[in-house]
Image 1 (spheres, helix red, strand yellow):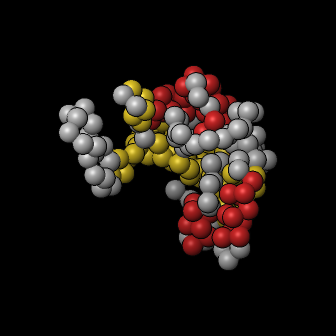
Image 2 (image 1 turned 135 degrees about the vertical axis):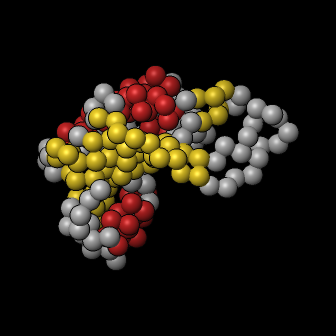
Length: 185
């Protein structure tokens, strides 16, 4: 999906794991993390990995040149978390409590991310459907629909992992997978 020396972009970079992998594989990496403390921790972690840059910023406003990105690789921030955050500008997706607002922010981010990608560049977006209290939230499916407004959806992969079951409720399973949405510019 990318070649050594090419640019890998993680717009929701968190602790910088994607950038560590990019360095190990000989790629340059650029990550955005909205939380300054986490971005600083990631920068310290990345100090030993050449060619990686982490900034604190908003995924909806990536400071990259149009057509400069060869691969986008990220895990979307979850909707419906219980994280106690006071962010009010919409950049902190975890703070968005309304699902339509969350999808709108994703739409803005995907549009901006697509602008940074060169023609033929690929994106791999990890996302899973959610259960919030008793409500099923089809986040992966809705994210694919929103992503498809900006990039050409190509395929999906399913990443499986072990997780204990959620008790005796037959509606709660050990749903232990996430979708890897694959798209091309």
